[in-house]
Amino acid sequence: MSDFAIRKARPEDRDAIIDICVRTADKGADGRYRFSRADYPALLWALPYFTLEAEHALVLTKKKKVLGYAVGTADTAAFARKLEHHWWPRVREDLSANQPVTADDRYVFAYIEKPEHVPAEIAKRYPAHLHINLLPEAQGGGLGSQLLNSLLALLSKAGATGEHLGVNHENEAVTAFYRKLGFDEIARLPSIIMAKPLKA
Image 1 (cartoon, rainbow, N blue to C red):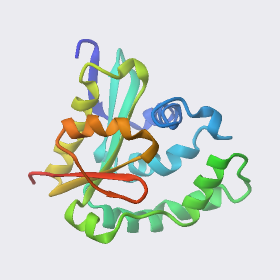
Image 2 (cartoon, rainbow, N blue to C red):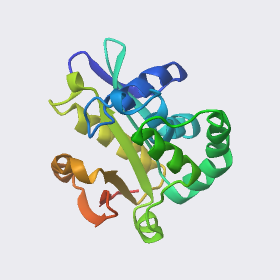
Image 3 (spheres, helix red, strand yellow):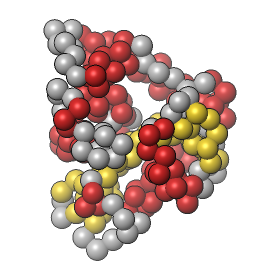
Image 4 (cartoon, one colour):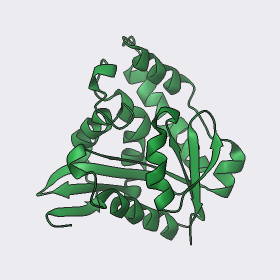
């Protein structure tokens, strides 16, 4: 990995994770133009895990600069309950004085009011799920695979017997990356849901 390293996320990584999340929010490309606030996508797909399950939050660094992250949970159903008690109420209150400006802002606000869930049968068979994003300078060379596999090992150690993740249906090309790592498509919701068994 040369100057690259994978380590547990730390509180001081929060701003970098927010930045990476929005800069990869347009189907892997820079999505800053899509949101009126840079932290909106991270409120859904990064910060809840970073905050509530820090033991399952990793970052990829190069010379101490954070260039990617992987966050997840070993138990999707339990995590959803944790979010409803400890995350969404606080976010709803924090955003109560804000109004959505863009179409993607509106999606974020709607999601916060009514979070989306995968079908219960998927969460039962593949209880873990994750989110991973890398800036362009960290893509290629197998770094994403190493980061993903490092998190999968943590989730497996936590007792997860299967892992699922969602892929934007407009970003189908990225499914090849997951297939190489042993994931199979199991549903379209319309997000593409991919999953693989884990050895607990």
